[in-house]
View 1 (cartoon, one colour):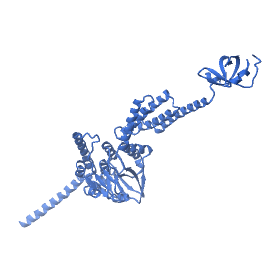
View 2 (tube, rainbow, N blue to C red):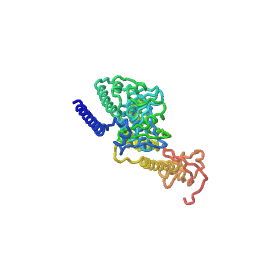
View 3 (tube, helix red, strand yellow):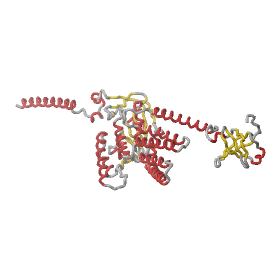
Length: 476
């Protein structure tokens, strides 16, 4: 009996073991191929993402460096949009952050831009002493890799009411919207949502080590090159579907992309202090125009300054700013027509027209965007034509008038009659009253003498003549 039970036990154990093997096989085959397994096994990734897996194995890896060292604003977003158009030249995008934060909408748009980039984005709070506070914390977390240097901080992300209305309902709406946004961001980047929540609700601030321990970042490193050593052979899943694996490299080629001149100006205008100052100047300029109407110069300056101030505060887009400058340019053209400024208004208006046109089409969603060269060419042609006209106008002013009363200056005047203190002279068939420039020579003047017109007395409509060499008119 014991032998039979022992035999059945062995058979049952063998069947159980066989079913266990089959269960583990099918479970791993159909259910365990999740995104969590990707971080553990590169071979599994190759099976799942064989068509999207990109392995970087080269001598030199190229890294584009973009910088956030001020207010997160619409101009900063424009800077990132423009520079990321050339992302295909690089293997990684490194975003250096040192910011107190900025506008909520601009931050969300920047994070959305990160989602659309098909290159790994490394967000790095660097160097030591830097910060990623308020809106900048979400930009840090939005990177495919989040890194902080030692002695840096992040957090304190409670949204502020810039209107100072103390409306608790609006404040709660902003907080709840930001919490929902953070929940999606935390899920996408596998971050600690509760630590983010604490930074939003309670303005919690984290040191770099605290951020690492709370799973807000991946590494605490002081050298940018150490980042690539730590992500080597670790798959990075992009939001566009690609999986990037850095296999081997020898050198890192950094390329720091600075904002161009126009972007620097726009980023500078985004400073709240400068924006408020421009708004104040603009309002005062308009008040001056109302008190002393007529020139329209303060009005135009006011429109431009107020537009720049509203743009700096993030209340209007860069495209609206461009439209405002175009309107100001046409008003200046009208001033040139009504009150000639010898081309100064036209030149200023042309500069505003070119700048405004470039800004109006910058990063707009229209289907066709004319190239900048087109605007510059057309505007330059009109400017050259206008300057040519102005040149010939000034040149003609230096010539003697050919029409009107001034045209007879320098002509010969024939004496027709002599009165007590004046002469009657004929100039080109017309009779004029004339005065000698030297009245003492009046006794020496005779009928039919030829004199020279040197000036005109506009008050009395009399010619001023001068005695030259006295000649007799033989033809009378």
